[in-house]
Amino acid sequence: MMWFFLWIMWFMLLFRVIGDIFRDDGLGGWGKAGWTLFVCVLPFLGVLVYLIARGRGMGERAMRRAEAQEQAFRSYVQRAAADTPAAGPTRADELAKLASLHDHGDLSDAEYESAKSKVLTSV
Image (cartoon, rainbow, N blue to C red; front, side):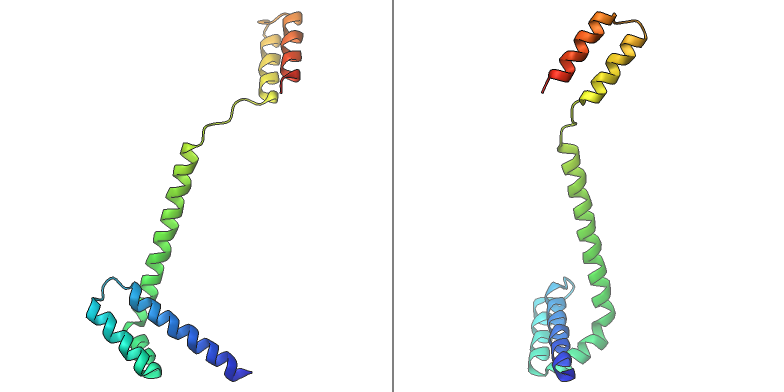
């Protein structure tokens, strides 16, 4: 069972290294081809050398990608929130406004009751 889990971990590490090789914008085509060939031909040595030589950069590139994705998500949410029209007043808002107008004497009792019944019966 332990060998099985070690084997799975090895493949996860191998795929992460290969993914990092192809995502790195600082490497040119020949560099990517060289590292990929080295990792595929001599996998254990290739991954070990890659982690020693470029391991710190792997973490930094992963952090930059995560921050860029977070920023893109936040800007998308802000754009989507700005594009949504504001909801109209609710029945409770309208009733509160009518009560305030009635309390200030701007509406008579009959006008208040009429307006209140219209708000309550509207769908």
